Length: 504
Length: 115
Image (cartoon, rainbow over all chains, first blue to last red; front, side):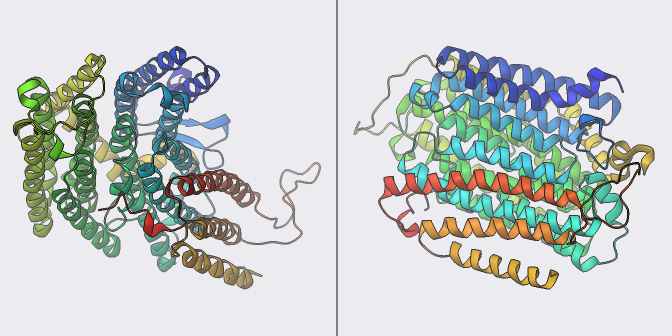
């Protein structure tokens, strides 16, 4: 394999690391940090497109770090799913960086906002690209430390209270993950994921294998905010700066979902009845509790936070039904693509509403459609996409997942998915009616921050809304991409062969 | 030795869980410290314990003679200890800041963001 191609896989990790380090050296200069944020994430976007192109051509791109051969050294592996996730991370990162320029105050910038942003992206991309289970843990921790610091940036009371729950549950998840790695290493004596997958098939002790599988299930379930492990998410996601909220909402839980997809297609056998039943129940209850939680909320970002949880349920449904229907995993991947863009955009819109009106509380808001009709339209595009209205991206995502459910005869899950879709629509119309449609409240105690230059915010939101529209109108290429990556996931021997090659 | 370690690890997990279920945020962090140490010890023990056999290759040979201790597990827990240390240092600073803001060492008084 040619040198530049193998380098393409390291770039999505190296670029944010370098721009983060440079950003630290330019600590005193606000302008340097802001420029680096846009340039760094822009370069990351280019690198991730390059990587996706390379993976689309070759199927797998593998790089052995330090030229240590595969089962012994750490490998970076990009299959289509990883490349798609990296591209989505880059899109979210770039959008957030531009959005941050106008919304993050100088005080927050001085606390090191931009270096942390780069570090978070490096951690997320590392987690997507690594082919080594312990290295995955390390990237998780890199991502977590950056997210801890971003979460409490500013140091308000709500942030502290949210952060304690977020930090505790995520550290518990890390400890469970580490314990699972320990037991797995004791079983097979290797850390390379492809090697583990090959060797675990020969292990007879199915009891212990199941225990390890369940430990991974719980650890990643906490990261993905699935039922019943989601409590850290609604307690913390509405507290930080809105750009941080958007980045977290788009990316962090999806890293957990990605890890579930990776581990339960490659390493553990998902058609095992226990794992399958657990995933099915988890998917259904995650969808339901998330959307019911949202129905009880009357704060813009809290409603959106609960909807993250319910949407995670659809992705897990795609994974859970994978052994029963070939379409299911395709649907799950399509759902991730759609969800990251739409959810990040909805948070960005809530931030713009805050810039205009100075509140996230629905009862303090109103009448925005009269003042800013275009913002209303942009919100409707994203909100309807989230609820699954044709011809937006959410319709096709839900359609594929539900179609797979029908093929798999999982009627209860299909019914839940449809009801949850309806309730999502209810939630979105609630926001629409309260924020945009109803008359503005007359008592004007809402403190209106000085509205600066908001053009960058509109541009970011419009670009992401356009992306939703494009994925909806031109669903075929995205569907093919999702389908090919699902095929790769469903045939783990290809991954194993790509990593271990003839050494197998 | 393995049996003893198994008991130690089990007690550590149990104590950690108990401490994390307390209302005090200080005890919460102590629980997290114990939990991370329990996981490290588990990693150390499951890789197989061996005494007095360092993984050294004698001069002129291509591989060590006889069974040797697994160096990888030790590298792993070294990494895990360092990461755990960093993260827990953050947690300690966090509870201090939280105490400054809330003026209470009690999780029940930190329900503002729940519903």
